[in-house]
Image (cartoon, rainbow, N blue to C red):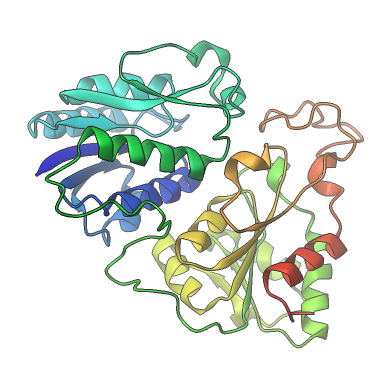
Length: 352
């Protein structure tokens, strides 16, 4: 048995993608994983059969703030705990400066992370100061622009590097989570889920556009669920006033949201974790893309609605120069409700 550790310390969407990567790696059962992640992410990894243990800490990775004495103590406690396990390798799936820094302290025999090609579209998101060659990096060519394609490539390399005894072939074509509680897709319910909010303003579609989509769905008699975090409930209720009853507004924990996805046939959301979570549960998706390069984060088989809005700086990779101007977030705000409804119909024919 080969023991590895994966470092999952960035945003929630990244954590969901990491979960899918580990689920794919379950095709190599001779590799057992420990996960080092933020405490609120642990729920994503507990159901995976190839995860042995989860070490929780709020790490100084991916811009996590605030970061004080409590977080420093958590980090060093996690490092000491991980070092005692003498891993064959550590893995970080973005490979920026902070992840590489942390992986040095884990003390694994081999450190693994992607070395993105100099012209790979993910590069602008990492920052020029973080483009550093390293012996532990595994090369990812620009042709593998999509994160799911890139991670499939890394999974192939990992299984070739640690091949096991050959008693079981590695099936890399299965993209979805092998989860104890999720064995195949449930019957389609016809429910359309909407997840309107994202962590950055440049990824948020206008509330009045969401109301237009809801009105179109209501006109066709389609069941709707509106999703958000617990603290977003007042905003969601305000958005659907006089359109939907409060009971269809679902604001639960991450675990609760993942459970509720079991009743949804299609999820419509922004460029955020919800779309990736839906894909991991085999729910059809429509992504309303904002200022990022949508080709990086598009889920396989999912619909994407996007526009540059006439902005010469598109995509700006969540570093908008338009904030406060008359053309603020023109890219996502130029997307119409009719475009989104057309994408919903393509994803789930017969909705309209």
